[in-house]
Each structure stands twice: as C-alpha cells, then as structure tokens.
Length: 367
Image 1 (spheres, rainbow, N blue to C red):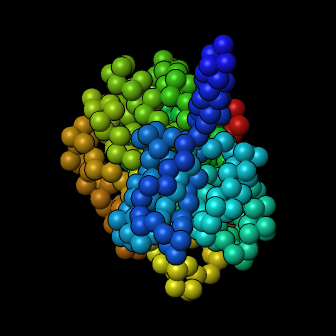
Image 2: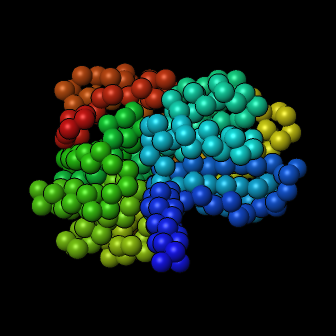
Image 3: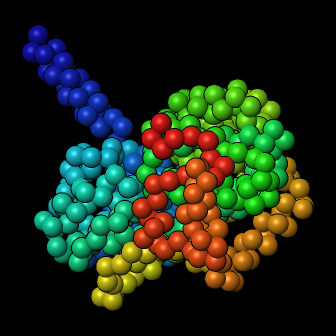
C-alpha cells in the first residue's frame, strides 16, 4: 500500500512539473560554461519554432554564440507580456545574467521595473521607447522593406484589393501598414490596402481566418504583421499571393509566396555584447535600417516579374545611397489631410508615435 502511495505522489509531482512548465521553455546550452563566463539571456514572446519574430531573434542569438563562443546564452520562450514577464526577467537577473535582451514591445514596463532593482545588469529592450542608465532600446527600420514589399504587391494585384493581417494597433504596426501602402500606391494608385486586426502575435488559426476573410472580400494579395505563416497558407489555398514577415517563409506557401521583409539581429547582438564586455556601452535608442543590414527584403521568387524586381532594387538603392526615406512628403491621411508636406520627412519621434493611416488604407485603428 505504501509503495502505491509513493508511486501516486511521484506521478502527481511529475505531472505538476510538466503542466507548470507548459508554454515556457528555458534553454541554456550554448556557449562556454563557467563561473567567469559572461551570461546573456533572451526573453521571447512566442516559441522559437514560430518561423517568425521569435525565430528571427533566436537566429540572432545563435549568431552571437557562433561569433562569441566565450559567452553563455539562455533563452526563455513563450513569455506573455505583462506581469509574467517581470517575474521571468527577475529570475534571469537573479541567476547571474549580466545582459538581458527583452524582445517584445509589451515587456517595456517590466524591463524598467526590474532594471531599477538590478543596476549592475544591462537590459536591452526591443521596439520600446523607455530608457535608463542600464536600459537601452533597439529596433530596425522595418518600414523600409515594408515599402519595398508594397511595391511588389502593388504590381502583382489584379483586383486592386490587398489584404493586411495586422497584430496590434501600436505605432510599430501602424507604421508598417502605412509604409507598405505607400509602396503599393507608388506603382499602383488605384489599389487599396484593407486591414484586419487579430490582436495576436502568435495564433496560427486566428491569423489564417483573418486572411480568409480578406480573400473572401476580394483581396488577391495577402500580407501580414504576424509571426506565423498562417495568412500565407490561406492565400495559397485560394490561389492568391502572399508576402511574409520576419523571415523567408517561402517553404510554407511556395505557390503563393512573393517575398518577405526580414530581420537580421545577429550583427547587432554581437556589437552590443562586445561594447558591454569592453566597457564602452552607453544607453541609446538604436534604430538600424536597410543600410545597416538590420532589416532587408528576402529574395523575390519567380512569381515576381523582372520589371518589378528592377523597380524594387532601384528603390532599395535610394534607401541605401541617398537621404530619401519612405515617409518623405507629400503624404496625406485617410481623410485627405496633408500630414507630410512636399519635401519634408517625418522625424524619428513622429514615426515612433504614429497613430494615423495614410491615404489608401481601408480600416480603423484598433478595430
């Protein structure tokens, strides 16, 4: 009887451990181990297998390990934004991690709270805007390749209706929608971009259904600010075309996929860690673009014609070699009001707080 009771208790403990850890995974198996090694941690909002945002950041972490093998790295995936992220950040600081990369906008307040308690730890927050002596922000000018992908979509559409599956109505997403639409309108003034909000970063089923609703409404090209290939798979199933995000997602919808705006975090991670290691680091708001290599457009497939590819390359060259940028006027909003005068360019502060749609977008912010 006693043996059966012990076995039952053991099983209960096992299942408790399994379900307590469900949805969150900690990995610390890369780089050299040792008490004197620099410990670097990464916190991801989604699973590293999402093929999107978290996957791209984890590829950057691997690049860091490859180029700085003396560094020990840890990552925790699927950490919800909010109070849970504060707990995770605290645990990582307590475990001796001297550098912590928090890779989602919603971690911002948690980072600031924890950073106050651990002044000897350097925190780098992706896509936020709050800084402190031991807190920096970093991001990429994803709106630049978004614009280029808009050129691709504007040339590809036949219905002149393009669907955009969007995550949350925050400036980052709004800025991307606007940049994409400006790219579309630069080559196809008759086309419009219809937005559907999912209020998710990672929900393959919901994001796929959102794409289906856009396709059913007449869209023949689907793009996305989501971390899964669900919207592209929906496009392929209905013989439409798709543009991905975060990484080259061609393998998930090869009959529909045109290209993707993509991230390349590795070089930034190496430069930041080296600066901290060498004592030259200072808190900053890093925002690298195509010229810096932080963002880019993935190779366009054979579904994109040569004329369009040449147009994209010409615009990319302008972004890399001139002062021209995507949000250079004249630009009007949905109501026809001039938001950016001819020859003027929005400042970084204006871009980071963007809360309006450009002319050509169909949809309401937040709905």
